[in-house]
Length: 481
Image 1 (tube, rainbow, N blue to C red):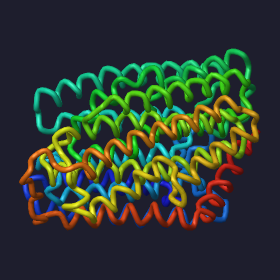
Image 2: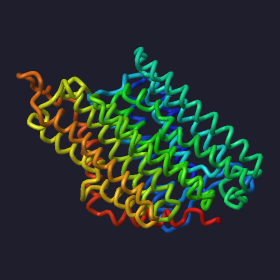
Image 3: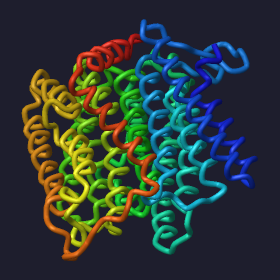
Image 4: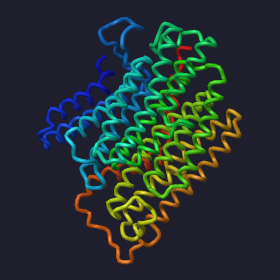
């Protein structure tokens, strides 16, 4: 069924059409908007079609499994494709405002849609080698987006991102090749039937390590805080919301599905990597004054929660990982977009140079509080249920040390969010007669940020829908074993 190909066909077609319309900016923006809406509708359709438990699939060229290039979209993949399309629509809408937009380049929109195609295809593909291919598409387009603008600092960040990302790429390609040599397959379904020998265990660990680099996990996360804070707000939101989550998803697909029940050493190692990732990320955020750098380090710490849930190796842990991923994509992207609005109001991302926004812009303060408190885990917002699921999973698995670390990181996250609130919103502005500029071109930014905040509130107030969906998606993982 070609429905399974829409996560790559629709954004890739949009990327091509926007590239062809590069000399006509209005037409290019119209094509981009139409493509984003079409992608969003396809995501909704996929969720509706897979809600009953039957995945949609297609094998290109009608080659018999496991030799053909296969796309299989289950509940997990469909939900992630939908939220990917949502992030694409939100960031493209925000780009139409004057709140720190990306430079108006004829190559911007084609690269953004190319990035969405790489992310969507990663959630749809059903074999390891093609997952590597889509990671490469994400790498190429993300490097191009990082280089937009050409400023010296941004080009330096692009080089760091490229070099460190290539480390993960080489690890992944090596691991996939060796795993193919050991099992004779790269197709997920065929690999589920493979025997997990000691050699296969080592190779699975190598592939998982490559995915951890892509996810921004400890200790190979330096590329993230070095590059993300140089991005304009819409691109920062797109990167922060999606790219590391693809790496986390790949770890979940590998250890929670394809090689579910792998030797405990892999899950134990992943758990301690996750704990270190949480601690280093939240500690790094506490030391920063630049709003974008604080948010960048919190991407790392929150990835740690997702990896910790996967490391439990239980259905409850997988449920928590799925719920946490979906919630965090929305919350983190929204915080990055709100940071762009803060810049628009104050002219700076440096918390020491801004202030007074709670009095001057109370609506912005209210919109900020929703994702900020959700990131901390304050009830009844979505982050509370996400962290509750992780903590409950740790408790049921008897992992009390991991549980204590997760709680400690949550309190440290509260410190960072309070720091932003006090410095940017609560304290008076350093300039006695400061007044924010008029909201002349901010309507798209308001629609994007308020819309994402309402989604966060909706998940928090009615968590049962998403919890049940995540539980059903987790229950379907690893059925081949």
